[in-house]
Image (tube, rainbow, N blue to C red; front, side, top):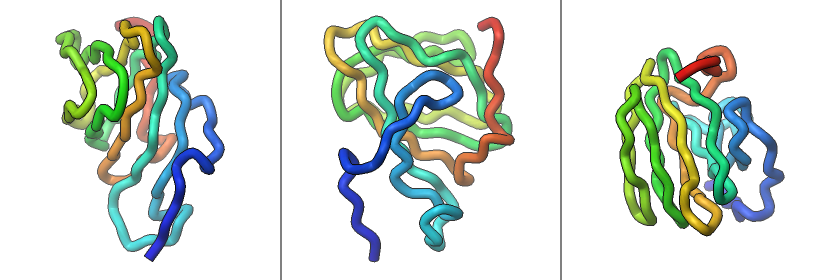
Length: 123
């Protein structure tokens, strides 16, 4: 068993410029899981950089706020309690076009690796 309190986890700026708290990762937490779990935050008016995960899928679970996700150029509205699946290789970014912090969980399978993420210069 492992218990963590997310606000106690130190946040850092991810490569796509979201604030991330890495909640669970099999390599860092020595867990027998294949996925990683992180909490991401975007301030109002901010956007993540366009990026893709080459061989990893990603699922966003919206906890608070609202915004628009762009996946392979297609906009999708996001609001609290929405779930968005992003297949491996898809070009993606999120815009917080709401008035509050956009907070969401990111489930990456297999577990996130910096070698798999590519920041895209143009979208």
